[in-house]
Amino acid sequence: MAKFAVSLKARLILQSHGRLLLLKQTKPNGGNYSLVGGTIERREYAARTLIRESWEEAGIRLDKKDLELVHVLHKRSKSEHRIVLYFRAYHYKGSPESRELEKFENVEWWPLKELPPNLTGTVRHVLKAYNAGQLYSEMEK
Image (tube, rainbow, N blue to C red):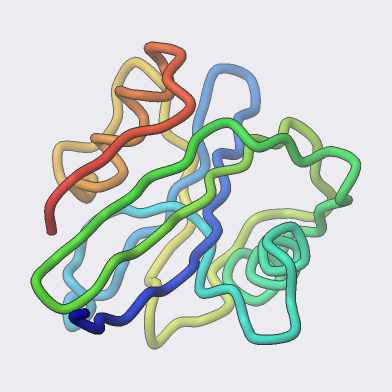
């Protein structure tokens, strides 16, 4: 039986007043727009990861009761399978700002109907599936 790596990630779909919160990556990290989130650490559950990453990356506080699982992405490449859990939140505390300047140059709100052209392909794929009401989708890396 072939062995391959599996990674688990959690991402946040944070909406407010018809806008979506996005992180603008620095040029060395791709220069694209992405969602808040990251790798689920060994002793964490997905909701805890999002609460931690939201503070570390964007300076906002989330409450577990405000998180709702809305999409699961299974992404695979020749070397790994990646499972990404996407949670929606409408409530948060704080004022979004980039706190990891080596990774993200800015945190920006974008109108849901006018998302940036350099949104990552993965985020574009997930938002399309999410908006179509799909709980699960797949893609090749």
